[in-house]
Length: 79
Image 1 (tube, rainbow, N blue to C red):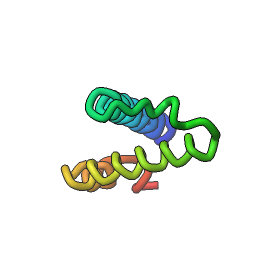
Image 2 (image 1 turned 180 degrees about the vertical axis):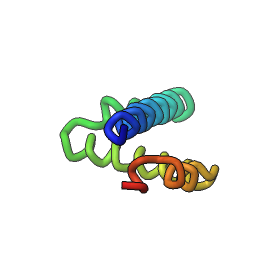
Image 3 (image 1 turned 135 degrees about the vertical axis):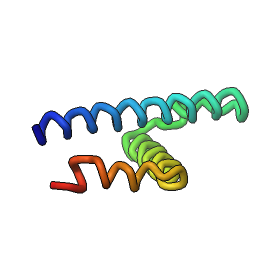
Image 4 (image 1 turned 30 degrees about the vertical axis):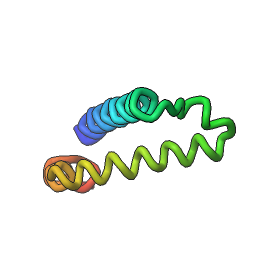
């Protein structure tokens, strides 16, 4: 049961990260005329880009209270 629940959580987190990434790419392109995909020319820049997206997503989740619910109901914090 633990592996199943953890797998569902991993899929949800992946979908959320994909959504946040897509939104940030659209905003940067439409509002600021910046194509982030072309900016990331090497692996270090690409890694930095994903670290920033992860930090932004974590901050948003914390501000809307989803981190607390995740730890109460999620498998990762209850292992």
